[in-house]
Image (cartoon, rainbow, N blue to C red):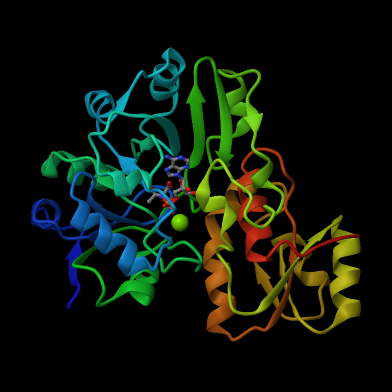
Length: 337
Ligand code: TXA
Ligand code: MG
């Protein structure tokens, strides 16, 4: 099929995208986190197309994107009070809440679970498309399953051109890593995937928030995980990657001594490194790392890099999200200096 390219700067694009979605098509849309591959969450055939285009395992559920609390109340039931508090504080924005499903969206979206993940994106184009279609939109990241998430429409086209009905050619995503995912039950929550809404921010609402083990450790074979997405090797470039934990001085010495791969490092240390460098952010600025991390992982492939040593970020704030993506990209190969 030919993928229709719709400019975000043309008013008509919103209505065109909405019509394609109402007709059961699949459209890549910008969000503030990463690009999403959207489909009508109530249309089983459309959802099947999403899984097929991405090559996504059938047991990995999709996030439903909404534009109002009314829509949340349609797709979910028995919504805890604290979920409303989170919605008020963090929506529209990069937070996804796993709630009890009402059965309104297709079973395929929940991949057999009795829950549904909902998020109200901050990106205006995304919300305009939801409003124009008057539909909850299931939208996983618009990449081929397993490859780095797309933060620009060019990344989407690299992966999915010819496999999807349309793409909105919008701005580059401003956050750069996918939304924070929490499951909310009663008064407490469990952090399933870290993102730009940090565990520190969530702790103000959930002082006892549980940090799921799968965030920082490799799930054992056949282990049941709370968020199925966490069990797959993810975001992985083709080369071999190592995550290096240690201070700047030790990291630079390590890569210079090894001398058999490139360095994925911070701007401040690049001058002290003798091998080729890929700068993915500024030291002590986790947001800058989140912004660049997926792009850098794609760049490694573009330049046919077969070995890279990645300087690990700290694990506080948005650093936890960056660390979580990198440890997967490195297939859990960590070297502590
Ligand atoms: O920022 C984002 O969340 C992006 C943009 C497009 O909104 N979307 C995204 O979707 O990252 P995806 O499909 O790549 O990741 C969804 C994650 C997976 O880890 C999945 O397992 C988890 O959310 N998830 C979805 N529904 C769930 C559920 N009912 N219970 C537990 N985890 C769920
Ligand atoms: Mg994804």
